[in-house]
Image (cartoon, rainbow, N blue to C red):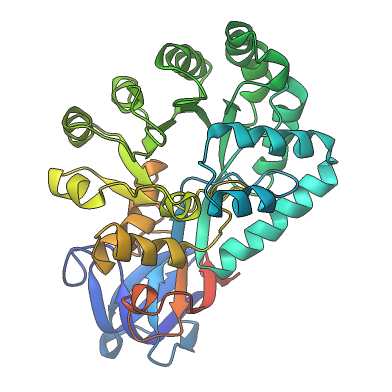
Length: 388
């Protein structure tokens, strides 16, 4: 097998405290050897072993590839007019999702996949090497199934979100729609997805409905995650912990019991600052969660309505500025935190044995990601040691 040495790394973030200094394992003047797509050696450049080939990174900083554990990239159309209205004072609600449902149903498979490929390229250009993709804009058995099939061609982290909002045809029959999602729709979806998700909030699904759907998904072999406490607190975080969901996403409206429950669980709190930025909503209290010992992830929430961004560096900068995270905490949450939200140990870090997914920065330090907001600092992105 061919090995490749990446040398003259000005600052390497490993996210492995046993290798570098601090909680995110920072190594100055570092080198890394990749073989068969995984990291096989990390250390000071002057101690680097020989390899079959070498690449000089000329003093650039290197970070683990971002892990975007919450995204909605299978859709058609956009909601720019809704954004303008919201910036003029209209309050955000879950109901706007239905306009994307209409556009998505009308789109061809080719159109949906072309849009997903466009967003995937943007994610890669922003340093994202692993991303999750949800369905949720079809809300029929056929449309949800085709969305999952399309997503599965581009990522292993596929999530069935038939319970995004009530399908328009069932607006007066919520019980029948819940039965459809937990029955026929789930049966069609199960072979194309790894995860099951529910938007459990005001204007979407209540706790009882979410519990029924998530338990059915779990019994069908899918792993649960949940949209929780974005618009209000109806008990979704408590349900997430009860069902051992991999992540509770949004977490904007939390009480002390919610924070305590998350801190004593395996459920990651995935925060989505792009959504608050784009809806002018209050940001979640990241500082409170971190100080309580909750595992926190950051993700883009890429979707056409409430967070139409593929830029993890942007989300990281907002988290530092408006959610009071340190640059190191934000970077960890956008990489290893995201991996934990997907229950992955092979990505989100650059320790020995990790998949060699990383981003080379046009900057001397990872701090510049927050220090220079809005500047494209991702020089290149590697997946399994190969330039993407």
